[in-house]
Image (cartoon, rainbow, N blue to C red; front, side, top):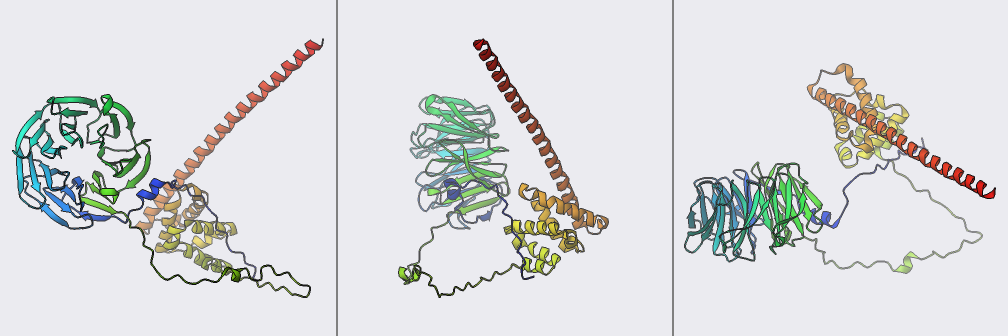
Length: 518
């Protein structure tokens, strides 16, 4: 027993994601804070001025949250019907909102009652925004119209009726007070100019448009609808630059990072994709628990807020850099202490004594050394081991199988113990790095406990799931072997043809040489 060799934990390669600068940057957020709203969160908008509060539109209320507060600092609820959108003015002092009854209301952040009410739409207003001069408001509604309002006089200035379906999104240029963009369910995105009283550019998105975004320079326009995110060059009259199809369901919202180098899109497939604005490739992705309706980023990307269909508001704050403690520096031994005796030459009468280092065995190794095979398997089936280091569990199962005692270690277990084994197999059986070991263990468990199926509904359900996974994995392995066989045949055929052509070339050359000699 003194010569027991510990079990070698096999290093299984993990096919993880490539670590890039974007991965490090976008993963540097704390655990999200979840806030429950009264209904689906249709719009989130950050103020561009300190303290960078954000407005959340849900149900018939608009809540103003501080960037680090979990309770609203102000609530606007003067709506007859559901509020669909709310946007801050550039200076952060005013807020404009649109509601289901067709009303557009202007609020002062310091007050509660509306400062202005613009009435002119007949149906729900889904998009509102301030123009670059801060004195006009643009609104789009389900009555197919887009209106421009004058804030000081609370009057309608212009009405555009070029859309043939609901107008669900829009934004104003940050540089030119006369330009703004709207997107409609008629599949078009139009840029309007108040000086011409009509649209100056119109592009066909191909799907009902859910969100539009104009770059700060005004040269590029992004539209989202269906599964597509499309980028248009407005300086070339609306020429399509790129069409992105990285989501599995409808894309509902768009957002730019503070630097303008990254574009974010949220979708009903519960994912937020981050694109590079130079290559338009996905550089990062976030997963959420429900379908996403709205998305916003704070100043310097310090906070990311996502609103979902289940009324949950997910708020992530960036981690602060760890501050180094200014503790007094401890004096360490001098360099000569470490090299003392290093150059000493062994003398003739010196005796060298090697003290063997004592190796401590792991608990599962101690159990295996004493033939406690069931106990060793129980130790590596603890949640702390199966979740953090599943390769240890797989290595022990492989060692028990090599010794021929795996069936003995798995037999005679009660409902709780067999459930732990089944949970581990179900979680890791489909992973290619563990499949060869765990398929064998799953077949042994099915053979052992097949006669007692029907006594526990919990175990029966897991058994059926495990059996289906095993059959599915075996089918995959069979298909892979068939594919490898076909590839071997193709490679063999190609090699044979190349060798035949080389022989023919050599024989022809030999004949030519023979003719020349004659």
